[in-house]
Each structure stands twice: as C-alpha cells, then as structure tokens.
Image 1 (cartoon, rainbow, N blue to C red):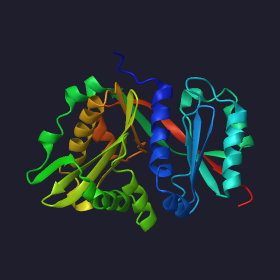
Image 2: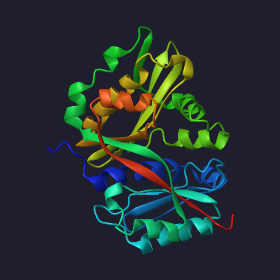
Image 3: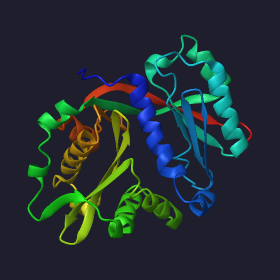
Image 4: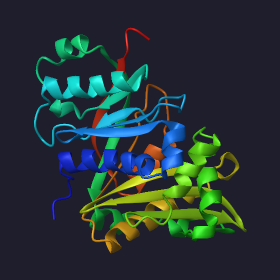
Length: 281
C-alpha cells in the first residue's frame, strides 16, 4: 500500500466533510444560517451567508490531479457573488496552480492569505505509531459518544472554535448519528472536555473538529482522539486518513500540528488560502 494519499482524494475528502457537515443539517438550520453549496467539475463550493465570520465560505476539491481551468474558478466566484457574501476562500493545492496563476488570481480578485498544512498517511502507518490512549492523564477517558450526548459534544466543539450561536450548535448536533460520521469525546468525570469527529469518504477519512477546552489542554486528549478516530477509519475500510491545520509562522507553535506529526501523519504540502473579495462590498 502506498503511504502517500492521492492528491485529488485528499482534497475531495476535506471539502466533502465541510459540505456534509453544513449542508446535511435540517432545513430550518440551513435556512437560518443561509447554507448552500454547488459543484463545478470536481470542485465544491460552500456558503453560510448568515454566519458572520465567513469561515465556512470555502471552495475546495479542485483539479483532481490536473491544473485548474480559469472558467471553473469564474463559475465559483459567480456563485459567491450571487450568494451576496463579501468574501470566500479558495483552497487549492499548490501543484494545481497553473503557470499564469499570478495574472489569473489578479483577474479574479484573489489574494493570498494564511496557509494550512495538509497532512495524510496510510492507516497502517498511523496505527503503528498511535499510542494516544495510553498517554491520557489519569482521570480522563476517551470513547464514542451516545446520541443523548450530541448537544454537549456540539457545544464543546463549536464554543472552542468561537461559534457559540445556537444555530451553529444545532448544525453540529445534526451530524451525530449520520452513517459517514463518527463522533468521539474525552471526559473528565461526567463532563466532556475534548471532542473530535472523523468523516468517512470511501477509502479516505478526514479528521474533523478536534478541540479541547482550555483548562484541559496538555493532558493527551487530542492524541487519544487521533488514535481512536484512526481505528474507526480502519474499521470502516479506509486506506488513508487526512487532516489540515494552520501553518506555523516564524516563532509560532501549532500544538495541533505537532500532535498529528507525533501520531504518524506526514505533511503533504503547505496550501495557501486564496481569498476572493467582492470589490463592490
């Protein structure tokens, strides 16, 4: 088995996780948050018009191994224009950028912003080095959540990322129990203090939504969650697992990145975020 995740599959799995997480919510939640999505070729574009941060206005899954055609980017830009949002992120793997990318980006009003590290590995390698459960501090335990724990799980995840609006928590709750998702938590006693999910996309799985409450960080929770989610992906028949996290700038330390490196993940590439801004906004 190759240890390197196919690029197209890695990018597709990531964006499909985001689209399913949002667009799979019940209709009242989608309407309240202004959620919509579209696909153009292999690419998927997602929008949440009423979520003020704009974090979920993102497009990905470009190219599937081929350089991106300008008309694909134009169609996605037009989708965001029609949605009436002021900005959206285009997530494009660096090797898919065409030679004339600078002029294409300028023409489409795309500017480079903070990047992400894309990580991935074959399941066997990740499991061979995963020892996160043993690293949990005494008093903590990790496991699959039950349906009645969905709201507590969702509240911890969304509040940890700064999304405390009730509709956002409802959206996260709705993902629990879906056949292509598994949801895990770390408990301190009866209280959930850390969370993480895994999205299953055929042969590839995406680590999604790993978060720990501030007072419980540094106690092995995310290492344990990476390990148990990798085992879930293996049980579901996945060959690879992928994840993404913020790239480190000079003098910075991203704990999530180092947790994944220790868990056997391999950096695949650093991917810039290309932000479209509506010049009329």
